[in-house]
Length: 514
Image (cartoon, rainbow, N blue to C red; front, side, top):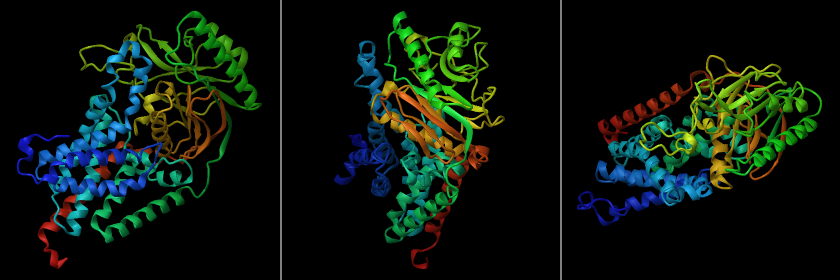
């Protein structure tokens, strides 16, 4: 983490090592992420980082320290991206040493804006200016998260708000502000609470008070307990297919027979009454939209029970889609949904990359969020894999569904931190939208999640099995469901404006008159 000599010529020796300190603080901050949830570390990390930025000695050095922090944070937080490359090592062996560091280096760039904003505040040693630094960092961090969600295809992963998706009651309570401002409000509150100790004893007291108010809001919002259940059982199969798997006729037939066998078992376990069977992402080796024989084979088991299954789909122009197909009997597919947020390089090559490296040419994107209306089922909002991390972009605002269904295949990431981080972020979508969420994955983590974010049932990693649960009733539309990403823009704007007001106060009012 060596800064250019022209940036360090006049710096004290201790400041020349600040990039390394920033890198170390980034590593510590990553330990607050799922599945570790060591959030108390942030109460040390944030004040320490703000002090480094305040004494940087120049805006270029502040940017460098901020980038080093972001690099450490993302290097530890995103190391799991190497796992699918190892699975395909015969073709992509050359990328193994570079994948995680390169992605971490790129995502670290988003930390440069909050870093330079904190340096620009340049606080004196007094309450208003120190608080201004905390508020500026929090507000601009939300802006940086918004940029990370939209720029260069978007990669909204490991936002600080996801740190609160802790298993159990504590997580349920502390996630509730997401109903107002999404994961972005959780990030803002986290940074403010963890940054206030920068102000000393008064800051610690203020931080404790904020946490009490935060928890009080969560307790009040969840006081009614779990949402009531509908008279509908959702039965999700977790088949645990190997990846990438074999594409020989025998292997595909064995995959199909496992689908059918587990579907039969799911029907038996669900018992009498209304139900729906769910298959995870790309679980079907058959093209269910066009393969009448495959639909007939399913119908022999399920009868009039609908099946929502992951399958490839070919459009009329020959384009290939990663889709969810709704099968209801042996007739034509009753509805389908095409994934529109595709994984860069894994499912498509971004147009600004001259070399097309996606295996098989990749998929085409669907038109966007859509609500499916399947006979016998409440209206469902489908999400396929990666789409569940895009806060505020998962529901058709003109046709609000009654529940969300996320089908995925995280087997590519093994038993690393990746599936845990994905599950934590996905869980927040239920709180944000006030909708129950069913998550069905190939190899875990599958779960039934209530509209407050409670995990009602769960099937863990690397297990084969069937998860059943009654579908909970949705809550009324939350403020975030109504206004979406506008709420993120509002909270970041007002945080920055408040920081500027505090800065003006610190400049214009002498310290001895405060």
